[in-house]
Length: 220
Ligand SMILES: Cc1cc2nc3c(=O)[nH]c(=O)nc-3n(C[C@H](O)[C@H](O)[C@H](O)COP(=O)(O)O)c2cc1C
Image (tube, rainbow, N blue to C red; front, side, top):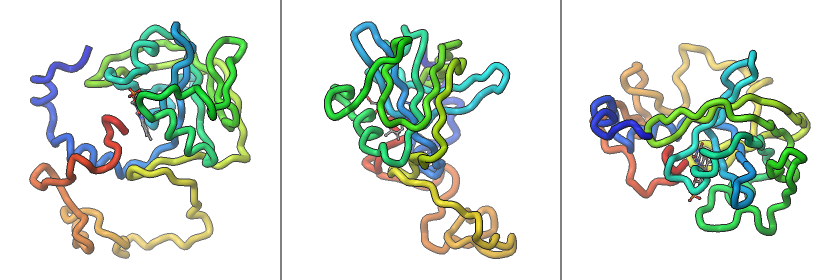
């Protein structure tokens, strides 16, 4: 189901470490995807949620082929995507932890009438039916139609960036930085900005990270 290794090697322009280092710069909202599996409730934390289409209302997310949730995800016709609030960091951690019963105490949940496990206290959730599963690399991209949406706008979202959880801050009200100004930290040597703190690295020539550096794109 995965892209053959030889093809992946041929098409890859950067190393896994460079990929991880770059993608850690991408801040993302945090969701938990749950489903009613044949052996009980299943769920995992994800940052790969993307809005895909308005008409029809499609979302996508990726699940690792190696994940314990993967077999159930392959079988399930429907999922519940929980868009977490900034009070749900521990829940996000629990649903990313291997080898535990993620639905045991202290997780509070109950099934919706349609069967999907609902994690209590989640401000926004989307009940979706699975439309397509596309094997891509070491993940499967799940494309799903949003059938029902519950939205609470009074809770701030939980964010993930550079291996840690964050809450939202706003730039509104702050003055815009003039384009001619240098950014506070290095951006990229190639773009003409001098590297100010030694953290600026470009291309495939630099050894970037030790393998022990935080969650990766593969294990997020
Ligand atoms: C912030 C964050 C985002 C994650 N995003 C994804 C994701 O989009 N897709 C995915 O398959 N796993 C993702 N994971 C990993 C899973 O939550 C989970 O840790 C992984 O499937 C390992 O669980 P397992 O040992 O039960 O297989 C993410 C983990 C974290 C902490």
